[in-house]
Length: 211
Image 1 (cartoon, rainbow, N blue to C red):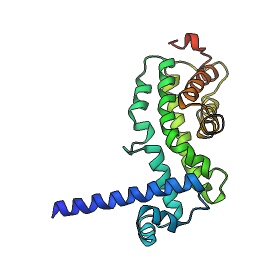
Image 2: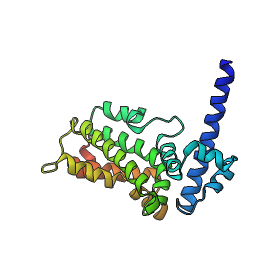
Image 3: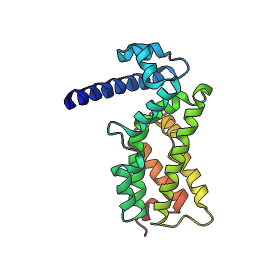
Image 4: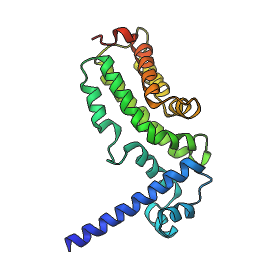
């Protein structure tokens, strides 16, 4: 009996993941408002009633798509991931920033297309603002562990440092570089690393191993 229940749970989880993946593809390709629920259900191979039974509203489905993009296949929030932990444990500010940027770029490769697709869509504003709030809170954690390794440059508050981080390491900027200007993710990561070290810590690339 237990195996049967487990099998049902696994099938339900697989179906849910299929619906979320279909929603992510549709939202990123066509936009949130322009995507009807029946099209997502058709792509996922389920009845539209199943889609509504699972997510209740289109907004809840969008949130699930955000989480799918940010957490990845392992469903691990960024601040609990291995790359975040490695950045926290790095011995110097240069290494910490490089690891933090590299890890964030892996998230942006999945999440930035969705952020770009819903940006400015009033129908998706609530979900966008909620998730941007999570990113803001995450960057506040990042500022805390980074400043434990090296002080911020003179006159820069932790709040302003967080604000700069939100823009410099942001999905919008990542999308502009990669989508519009044809930069590679590694080129963007290199630029972001230099920008963070210089703008937040006053550390140039040549001496980014400063204690």
